[in-house]
Structures are given as C-alpha cells and as structure tokens.
Image (cartoon, helix red, strand yellow):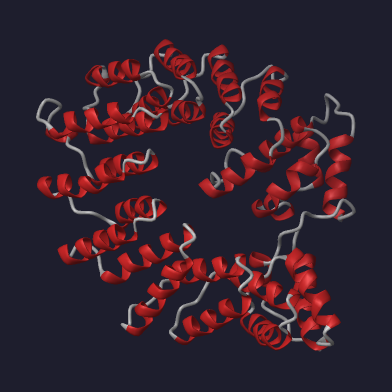
Length: 473
C-alpha cells in the first residue's frame, strides 16, 4: 500500500480544486440559498439553522473556491456576511485579497445589497465591504457603502475612509471621499492623506496633491518624507519623470523641513522611475546623491537599480553597483550577488547567469532559495530540464531548498521529454518529502509515469492527490 502523507500537510498544500456541486455541505447550502425567503425565516436565520457552526462548516480557506459556485453575486455576498459574523476576527490581508478576487460583480452586488437593507448593517460589515472593495479596486461599491452609512447617520472611522481611498481610481473619486469625510466632521489621518496624495498625483493632479499636503497641519498632521514620497511615486506612475526629479531636489533642500528629507524608499522610487524611462545613467548617479546625504542602500534599492541596469544589458555597470555596495559594507556579498543572479535570469541573460552561479558556488557564496528557484524555473522555461535537474541536485547538496512549484514543473518536464530515470528519482523525492504538487500537474505526471511502466511511483503520487481531494472542502 503506498505511503500516505500527513493529512494536515496535504490539506494545507495540495487542496486546489473547488468542492463538487454534489458535496453534501455545498448541496445543503445551495438548497438554503435557493429557497424562497420568508419574513419569519430570513436568510441569515435559515443559514444558521442549517449550519450552527459556520466556521466549521465552511472554513475560511474554502471560501474563495466556494463563492463563485453560489447562485448569484448577491447571494454570494450575503452568504459571506453571514459566514464572517461581526464577532469573528477579521480576515488577514491575504484572505481578503482572495475573497475580493472570488466575489463576482462587486460593483453591482454591493449597491444591490445595501438598497435591499432598510436597516443599517453592523459596523464590522461596512468595514468588511469597504476592505473587500479596496482589494478589488471597485470604487462604486466603496462609495455606495459610505453613502449608505451617511443615510443612517453613521460616521465611518478612519480605517473605513482609508479603504475607500485605496479603491479610488481617479482624482474625482478621491474628492468624493474627502467630501464625505468633511461632511461627517472626520479629519483625515496621515495614512489616509498619504493614500489620497498618491492617488491624486498618479492621476496627474499634482496641484491638488500639494494643496492636500499643505492642509495637513489643519488636521493635526505634520508633513513628512512619507507623504512626499507618495507624491513622488504618484508622479512616476503618471509618467512625469522631470517633476519627480524636481520634487526630490526640493526634499533634499531645507525648504520643506528636516522631516521631509528623502529616505531610502524615496530614492528607490526615483531609481525605479528613471530606469523605467531609460534614464539609467541618472539612476546610477542616485548612489552618489545618497552617499552625500548618508542614506545607505538596502536590498530593495539594490534589486531595483540592478534590475533596471540589467534590462538595458549593461552587465559591467551592474557588477560595478554590486561591488560598490558590497565594498561600502551596507549589504553582504551573498545578498548582492543573489540579487544580480535573479536579475540576469529575468532579463534572459542565460550564459552570464549560469557563469555567475558557478562562480558563486566555487567561492562558497550560498544561493538563496529565491535565486535557486528562479534559476530552475528559467531553465525549465527554456526546456533545459536535464540542466535544471543537475542544478537542483547541486543546490540540494549545498542545503538550498527550492520552492515547491519548482519540483512539479521540473518533474512534469522530465516526464514529458522522456527522461524516465531522472523523473523517477525526482518523483520519489517528491513523495518522500511530501512536496506540494498541483492537482492538474499531478494528474499529467501520473499518466506519463504509467506509460513508462512505473506503476508504483504513479500510485504513490495518485495517493497524495486523492487524499487532497477528500480533504479539500
């Protein structure tokens, strides 16, 4: 009998398929949702009677796969509000993002839900709707929530206004939120102002963004580098590089105050903008500007600059940046060279990337899991599966563990190309270590292994897949 992996591990790693419509819990849920509502048994009560323990019946991790299967966008939304009762802990940012992606047609379902609610919703439900709308980037839904709250005399808290500003897609959207905020007597907080300034600048409304910054003292807030960096990044998003450069020069001067001096995030935004517009020479000069002001590069800055240089295939200058940063002692050589390795792979400089990896190995510079995984993925993308298998083996000997998706991609590639021996060795490793393989990928691998006559290994992988499907709901 094939060995079985840990059920908990499988439930967390291998569950990717939505529940089947004939699943008992889903069938019962569809029955409740499609039954005509009555005044004596509203939908929330009917759901609670059918499922006394919502969190046990419908774990949070299953909701993104479940919501699209429900009869209508409105019922999906109503079910979600019932499932996430006001007293329950708020979902994580990752969970909210997944829910926002899975909820269909928020722009119409949220206003429809609100228009059919003659009584105000619980305050946590308003906050949840605004947060989900922000993650989905659906401003009409956010505006409908704010207006519904105002119609009942409810004042949104700072977090609610911040969520609405995050969903804004234009300068007029930002103005609409600020108008409601002013009408409710609420003052914007620094996070809300930062978001509003970025949105205004990204829409090209630089003067409006500047006026909002100038009004910060009226709200009890002090302008700082964060809000000016938001404005600079918005200018870069809009494509106005010259105004962004002028703004950073203004920040470097003394006119805006000591708290508005550019920091490493500001310079990173500028470098990304310059590189994105082909102004690499100016981007390289940012290092000197930083050195003159005592701002030390970090890994994100180095990655941004090196990526921009590599995109232009100016490899010698990329090495120069790495050697300079390492020489200054701000970042270790291992971190810098791993950043360079990833950038070389991403821009398709295969020979240079492999040469760098070999030199790193010889000099004892450890590859990071991110760099190693990027390397194997790129080799697989180029159909160089045997080379990828070779490098994976070397990295594992040196204690570098790649991401789980790398194993599935490589195993499928080896199987499709007929490299039976290598596929079997890697497949046994996958089973022994209980490595995550996506269900669709696992099915194809099992088919190929059976064709090659490796029934035993195919049954092991099939066993993992079946366990995952049983536990997927």
